Image (cartoon, rainbow, N blue to C red):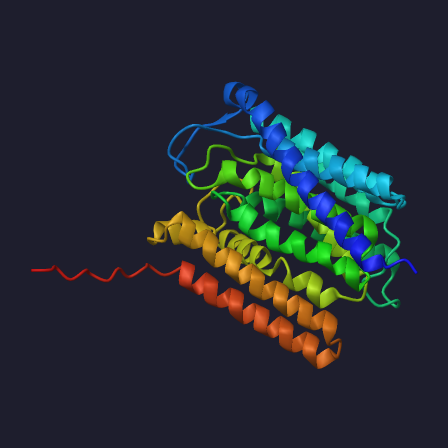
Length: 345
């Protein structure tokens, strides 16, 4: 009798390794062009000090989608909604590439994001909310949430390795959920995207020699949002909220603070908690280590909600997740106290 578990592990490993190797190779090939045409020059709001090429997201997104598509076709699984989300992600990648080189008007950029997210949501057959809520209302809420998620991933990609520290645990966990009824297309895409991030990581390690750019952060937000939607549609809404909870809370709290101050929220700034942390004396590695460890804890809590499905456990895990993220945000917002070293005699 065919044992499906070793087969699944093999498929995920191939997607992971394929994504990592393909991403790294694409970066090596593309980097001379990015150095020439896509330099991000530092300004008052930047976390980097020297001009650094951006556009690494071309390799991450390209490798993730190509490898996922090859693995799905090669293993005989139906492509399903993968083709639609891949097309939408590529559309956002084009938008991001143009914006990286010559900034687009905020209204046009937002409109194109809404179109891409709507294409994914309106072709999705899963219901997330109770049946008594009209489908049209649910879809409108999901489009709004999807556009916000795409933007918050873009907003949070402002520090070396922070998107790697966020997305590697999230995508790895989503890939492993194939063993817990995660849709095949989403699980394999998660593994390929996780591998693509691992291939990108050495180039983005502090001090970064390459940035993702909007060409990467926008479609990555769409792809991960689609994966989380698939997870939520598998009766795991609490897990889908827990996995990106740090990004959700940092970006959302920052947005409301800026709105309260009547700032132009579509303009670049240094108000996010992770940015304030570096201003408060945290090293870049300290910030990303906090984010990575926090995401491991959130993934563990998400796993708890999947194993123990009682309502009280879902609420308890969500509450624990909120507390953990709040503690990290509070730590980031306070100046780091340095302990003076004793002088040896």
